[in-house]
Length: 390
Image (cartoon, rainbow, N blue to C red; front, side, top):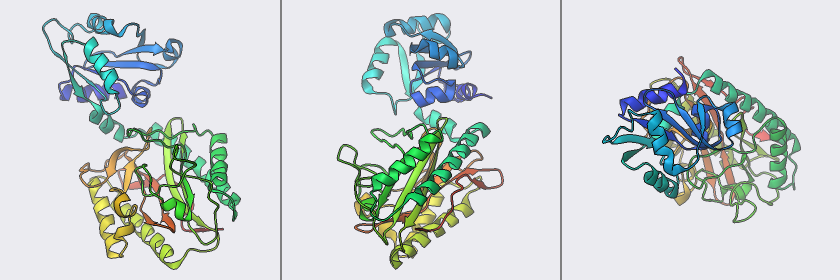
């Protein structure tokens, strides 16, 4: 069953007559094209890609028939001619779209254009469909993992005392791009941005910021308050290399810690606890495990080791998850967090990232990406583990 057919199946289950896909990533996922417009998917029958631009590219890429968008005011009538059962006179159709990413202003225009229909938020349906990856999607993530491994090795060979975080990030971005990295890592969360990850050393890695993660980074200015800045890398401090790569739209995410010299004892111990949390999570990575249970187990371990205050951030800036789904976007379902009751299923791809934050000193931890299999899991990240001493 292809992706549009799977969407139609859950639409019928939920009584949805039509789905107006609006988000670029979802357009690509369901239809193979990211051109500007809407994909209209009926509960029964063939879909239509209604495109503002580029019509030429859309016709080359789209799995569905393509039609020019034209005036939004006439769109409902044009769809009624093609799908008369949905828009029959006197019938209130139920349409869905991804309200988690659709601007209110644009939604109000759609409401005005589609008089006489009822709207439903279909974003959860899309997120749940995208949780399960196909072999082809997993193959793209494997390619990204191989690229990021080569990039990490290039970065490690280039680390030297006194270089800036930005210089190290430049090595990483150059190597990534030369191997096909798209130059961005897409996120769905509102107002969230990520380019290549977080590269920061010592105290700057532990600086909190708006980004929803356990590490922040000073960044270059308040205009981009995260990741690498101009701070110089010193000896005996953790160098956080939390980086990803996007190949053919699909993302890998991994974290490694390097150090010039050696870590202070308490940071070394915290790193070892992060590895233990990861190993405990791996033991639970199998079909049927409830997503939140991995997070709750990690909280217990951090507390037992006296590190609860430093786990996944510090004080008010602690984040409340252990890991996240990953694919076309870096913040996909399932989230390994309290309240996420999804049982793990074969095809889910999950990044797990236990970290400890020490204000004024740095961040230590590890992150790998895994795919759930029928027998348990496969680790997709292939980079060497452990503290990397320079």
